Amino acid sequence: MASTRIGIVGLGQRGLQHLKTLWHIEDAQIVALCDPFADNLEESKIRSFVADDFSLDGVDTFTRFSDLMGSNLLGSNLLDALYFCIPPGRHDGEILKAARAGVHIFAEKPVSLFQDEALAMDAAIRQAGVISTVGFQQRHDISNIAVEQFLRDKNLVMATSVGNGSLESHSVKHTHTEVLGGPAGRVWAANFAWSGSTVVESGIHTLDLMRFWAGDVAWTRADYVPRQADDIEDGGDNPDGYSVAFGMESGMVFNLLLTRLRKTFYSDGYMDIAWNRGHLKFEPEGPVAYYYDGPYPPESKPSADSLRHPLSLPEGENSMTAISRAFVRAVAENDDSHLLNTFSSSMNSLAAVLAANASDQLGGEKVVLNEFLQSERYATFRRKPTAATAPGN
Image 1: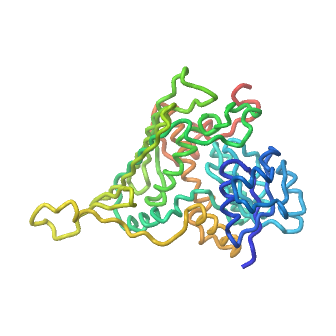
Image 2: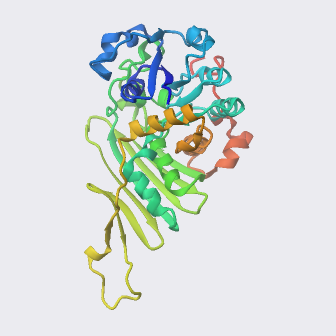
Image 3: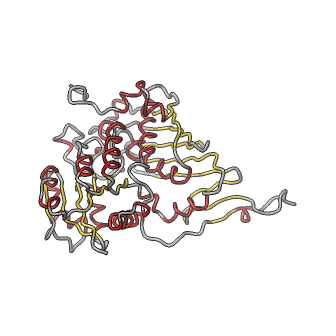
């Protein structure tokens, strides 16, 4: 199979992680790197994050996306696919232009902070017929695949995920937010305007994983606990806590509870999925299902050991490698059946978390996703502000 020729747009934390992964995939060839800040394109810096043998030999670098799109790479059909690793609020038509040029697309999540912008990207991708996926690599984790296979025939009723984290848990980002009106410390994931909230920036991973197991979201209801004004430093103004309920089309309810506390520097979590005959949770050694499978009613109370059923895990590699390998193969064979999600299929995940923001801001009202996507009542939550309507103008 010929190598898939790939460019990466955005050489921040996530872009560097993808570059490191792709550098070691034999069927992938890096041909272009693009970042608006020249220091992010320095070979020595990239090498320190990627591999000792990393070299820019044979790799074109650009500080403007327009220059990449106007380069000989496209004119001579030397570029097959682009990875977009752009902060979600900083998109400016790049994915639209790439799709219209026939370039296959891997977009990091969240693909936008505005549903209408994301839907425009999706329309361009579908019209162009290019291969596309969104970076929900947790679908490719072998434990999560085992859970999906186990739950496939179950009548799911309830799931709960608790994620306790510190506001500073993200490492320093590489986007020069300090010159773009953002946080001085560059940790934009802690800032509401840049991240869209922790539910949107981080919780979308857990929500999408729940969709992998339980299907699409029909409605959401949310209440956030705002950070006190005297606890905001370096633009870190995301709420302290989030309580979100997602109603799945199957009838299951998923409760997502998140905290982002300052100066704790400790994270932990818990996840449990219940069906009508048992429940499954993640333990240190992997996912374990608890249920009774003997004669009913039992002659005596079943022992705890008899109810415990660890799931067998399939063979596989780490999820970051698995998702990129699937994308590279999909592009090479022009067959998106190798993907566990496409750009289009991921729209429900984005709508659900953006609707959670809307619910909180509307006093915790239940937001039905079909109405969120269509009703004028929610238009201000879907639309990207213009320069004239952006905050501060």
